[in-house]
Length: 580
Image (cartoon, rainbow, N blue to C red; front, side):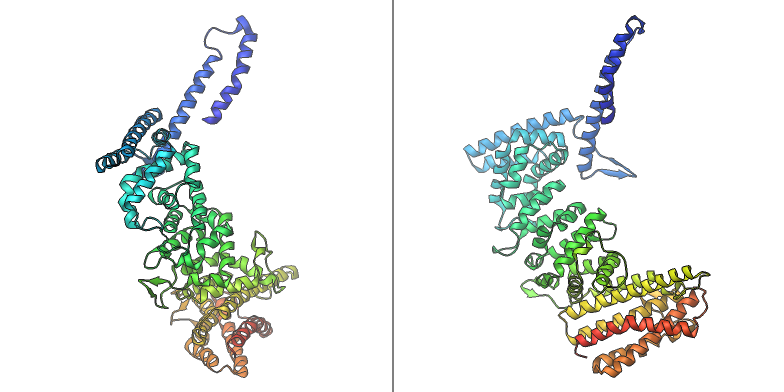
C-alpha cells in the first residue's frame, strides 16, 4: 500500500498536465483529484492495518488459526486508542501529583488503581503512545522508583517473587513502553532516559515485566552486563531478567553472542554460576539452545555466535563456567552436568566440517578452504574448547552422538576407496573423495583426543573416554552396515556376516582398556594393528551392505596403511599425554 501511495503521488502531476493539455477534448468527469481520494484511502488503510498488526502481535491471548491471528481489540481504531491513552495518562499524572503532595497510604492506593487501569489496553501501541506522551518521562521514572522502594528487597534487582508483587502496578507501564517502542512511537526522551538514567534495577524490571523490542534488549543488556557478576553482595537478579528476555528472542541472543565483549561478560563463571540455588543456568542454557541450534535464527549471526563461544571457552579462565555451580551453599555433585555445557556439546557438530578445515590447515593437510570468519580460530583454541566440554560431566554422550552422526554421513563403504570407474580421471576423483573422508574422520578424532588431553580429568576418567572414542568408529561402520543403530551408535547383538567379526567388541574393549592400564609401547603397536584390522572388517561389511564386492588383497594392504596412518598418531598422542 505504501508503494501504491507513492505511485499515486508521482502520477498525479503528469495526469493533471495531460488533462490541462487536452483542454476541451478531456471528457467530463473526475480529473486528477480522484488520485487524491485513492491516495487518502490507501494511506488510511495502510495506517489502520499497521496499527492492527502491531497490536495483535502483542496481545497475549491472541488465537492462532493456521497463518492467521485473531484477538479482541479494546478500541475501534488507532485514533480512538490514542485518545483513550491520553485521557488515562492525564488521570495517572493527576493522582501521582496528588500523592507527591500528600504521600499517604490512601493516595498511594489511588495511584495503584489508576496504574492497573491499563491492564489489557497497553498492548495497543497507539493507546500506549498517548499514555506515555501525556504521563511524561519524569513521572514514568518516579513511579518506577517509588514502586521499587516499596517492594524491592534485594539491592541487585527484583527477585522473581518481588517481580510478581509489582507486576500489577508496573506491568501495564512496562508493556506500554514495549508496545510503543516496537511501533516506533515511544517518546525519544523517555527511551533515552530508560537507557541512560533509569536505575539499573528498573531497567532490568522493564525486561522482566514485558517483552521489549530487540534493540532495547540489546542496549539495556550491554549496560546491565557492565554491572553483572559478584562485585556487589547479593544475587544478581538484574542479569537474570536479561537472560529471561534473551530466552524469548533468538535474534537478540545471537547478536549479543556475536559481540565478543558482551558475550564475555555474560559467559564468565561469576555470572553463569553466580545465582546458586536458582534456575539461572538452565534459563541461560535455554537462551543458548534456541540461538545456537542448527537452523536457528540468522545463519551468519549463528555462525558468528559460535565463533565467539568457541573462542571464549577455548580460554581456560572461562572453563569454570561449565563446571557444576552451588546450590543452597553446597557444591553440586561432580556428576551434575552443566546445562550450558550440554547445549554446546549437543550443537557443535553442525560445524565439524569448518573446525576440521581449521584443524587441517594447521597441519598442512588437504581439505576445505577456511573462510567466513573461521580463520580467526586456530587448532590450539579448538583443542582447548573441546577440553572445556570433555571435562564436564554429561557432555560426552552428545559429543559422541555428533561424532557418530558425522562418521555415518561420511559412509566410507559407499564407494571403492581407490576408484573403480572406467577412466583414470574418474578413478582419481574417487580416490581423492575417499582420502578426503579418511582425513576428515582422522582430524575429528584428533580434535577430540587433543581436547581430552587438555581436560582436567583423572587418568581413569580419560581412559574411559579414550576407549569410547576409539571404538565408536567401529560401532558406526558396522551398525550402518546392517542398519541396526540404537542408542546413538551402540550396535545390536544380531549382526550379520563379517560384521559379527568386527572384533568381538567386548574383547576389543578389554584389549584397549588393558593397554591403557599398562601403557607398554609394544602393546600400543599391537593395539593399533588390532583396531585397524577391526576397521577393515567393518569397512568390508559396509561395502557388502552397499552391494559392492570385497576388496582385493592389494587394495586391502593400501587401505590398512591408510587407516593406520589415521589412527596411529591419534592413539600415540593419547598414550603419550597420559604418560604411556
